[in-house]
Image (cartoon, rainbow, N blue to C red; front, top):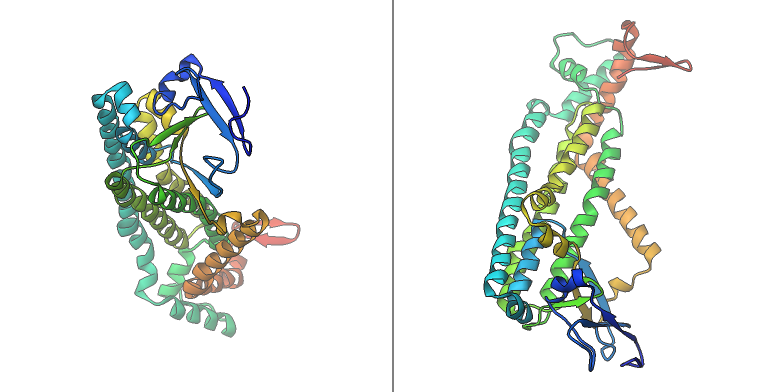
Length: 362
């Protein structure tokens, strides 16, 4: 058929039998087409008549995404007419319950990690200030005389097996893991809050489910009770993880615990995969928040410049947190590392190994 719009390419796509249920959410037919045909237009925006910047944000494949899609389906007039009110509101209730379970477990785990594990790891360094500890060690290094074996500073130093700059390196990797989740959650919050009001909330295009509008009250509830908590949770996990990694006193523990922290990030996805139906999972996996903004300067930022800004921001934040905010702790660890190489390892024949003339120990 001839293109409907001259400034975009439009095609009539025949719906496959196994995709009919998804297309029933919000089916768009071309002029004169049957109910099994779907109109797909490629162009600068949702409609070629409107010139703007089209932003698509994939909803999380987790309990958070399940709650957003459930609310959108319950508000979609075509979905409720096609499958019934009980199906629409049952799907919304299912998504909200999954969200409460997944989000609640994540909040509890982050809270337990912060109030118990981190405080226990931090307690030995709080009894005596780390600046005082580093001063005592550097005094011994300068005088060439080892500290007494019963000295509190020496006891804490001998239990610390960290390697200089290892916390900074692992913290940098941890931020690289957390930043995409935070940015995506922030983008989704902005797009969701910007959606127009309407009863046709879902548009199906080429196998994707695009949430293009939401009534005002459901939209406010989704932003306040789903998206904003998701942003805060991602930020809180990044902060708690940074502090947790900072007080790890051994390189092996540092790496293993960094991997364990990543598990908390996957809890919502694990709960969703384990407790939701396969049909619901398939729909959530192909759902996007879609909105066309009139002006989006940041969205047009050059890719190389965007990457450079991310590198500088993450590197700057890592250096500030590890070398400035916790500079006294890092100074103590460096002094401890030097103290052991001067007084402890030379008297320990079985400590470490020799590698090309260098004696390596920790």
